[in-house]
Structures are given as structure tokens and as C-alpha cells.
Image 1 (cartoon, rainbow, N blue to C red):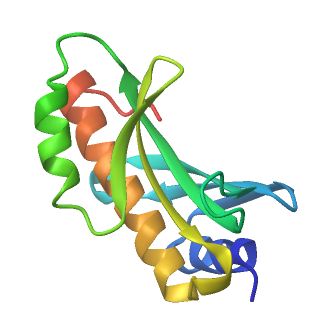
Image 2 (cartoon, one colour; image 1 turned 135 degrees about the vertical axis):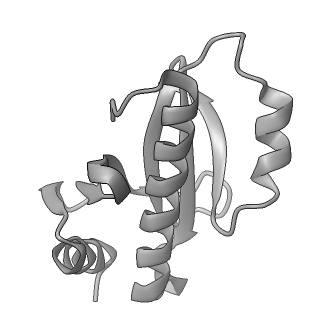
Length: 132
């Protein structure tokens, strides 16, 4: 089973929405508690480190601003199973990645769920809204 097939299967299982853009990119909208949703972008790309194909799961949190305690975010990175915070294009995001050839379908589920839940938690913390 391909990574994107596993993503689609998981989206169907949780009542989410799966949109496949091409063979390297898809979006899944993950339903969460309290009627909230979080969008997770899935991209298949070549790793700049190993050269192998990897799957990257990304969700936006909020526009970065200096009031966000980056030290605290780095401390929290050490507590996550798959995810980490990044700042990209002025946005604070939660991202997880894994090599395609070693990723089991269950790992895909766990990564999507963790990215979505963490991004939603910190989005609510920093903005007080359900934006992404």
C-alpha cells in the first residue's frame, strides 16, 4: 500500500476529507474534538539528507510573531513521538516525516493524528480560533 493510499484509507476511517492533487501531494482534513478540524498537507519528496523518498506531514499553527516563546516550543519538541515545530515562510507549523520505504500504514495514522492534534492545540493556544 502506498503512503497516499494509507492516508486516504485513514481519512475515510475517521470521517475526514481526502484530496489528492497528484502522485506526490494530498491534503487530509482531520476532524477533532469539539467540532474542530485541522488540515494536514502530505507531500512525497526526496530527502535532502539521505536522497530517499520521504513523506512529510505538515499543518499550519499560526503566523509566527515574537510573542511566541520559541524556547518553550523547542522544549516541547522533545516530548512528541513523531512531530516537531518549524518556522517556514513566516508560519509556525507542526511537521512529521518518515522514509516511505520504512513507513507502515499504522505509522501514517499516528503521524497524521499527532500533527493534527498538536497543530490544533497550539493554534487555539496562540490564536483562540480554528483557522487551519
